[in-house]
Image 1: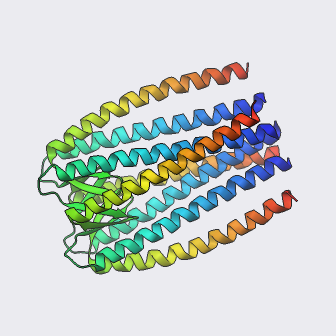
Image 2: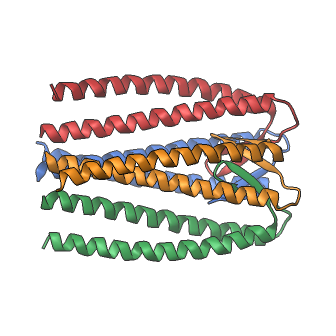
Image 3: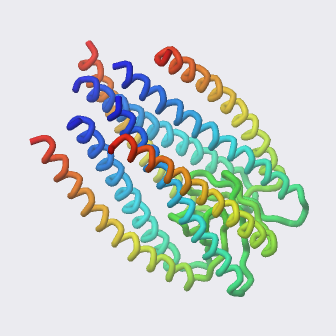
Length: 95
Length: 95
Length: 95
Length: 95
């Protein structure tokens, strides 16, 4: 039972880490998008909502990026806390 | 054997919950897209089909959003039922 | 050991089924895209390659859809064969 | 315990292989995008950053493709090394 529990915690830990890394990657992409938008030139911009793409203005895009960045950052913090909990749970199982 | 079965049910439950949450997220995105489309301004619109993007009219986009919304809602209900079944199955294994 | 093997085969079967269903969904999306492209109207078209979107002509889009459709269909057949093998493997473990 | 460890290594190996194949697929897509961009014709181009699409110039797109190609290639090499390690780890468990 202990082995199954440790395996399960290990699996959860791996998933949480993957999720965090995916968010960190998205955060980097948003930074890059912002840079490109601000780099000048008349650029058409779209936002993807599920399978629908809607053209947005420069201001709408930059606002969205700023809002999403804050969201991702707080979610990444939450996941780091969860990773810490899971790591502690695992260390108690494997003394 | 009981432990393996409980683990398996737990895994299924987690996947069903993830799927439901993913759909709820997509539902929220469709709401947001609709809002933006109706917010005015001449906006180009596209639908993504697999790896092909096709320009659509305002009416086509709004119809698609409405149809998809109904689909997602019924799928979310189905997944909630499945979650209930799996939770009950688990509670019978761990009395 | 038998239980672990059965669990593993069951997991593989689930993944193969998910993959097949995902492809069937994409196939349906391609059918829908083709319908829309042929439905008339001047529509801009793009293909998504990883994170790069490239505008394509109507002919290029329709050719791509036809080619991808054949690819998906043969892949779906291959996955159905694999499902059959896995199902047989499972039935031998659980007589 | 050995069976659980072997199962876990097998699972990791499968995930690493999937990741490598996904990257190889993306590499092929970038090649195809480049071909299409260079094939002539005035084509609008976009890059997708998370859920934001930003129009890019021909030069920006080609530069991005070249940079990403190098990144994917080195990541694929790293995953192949990891596959080799995991395969060796498995072969030691199942002599």
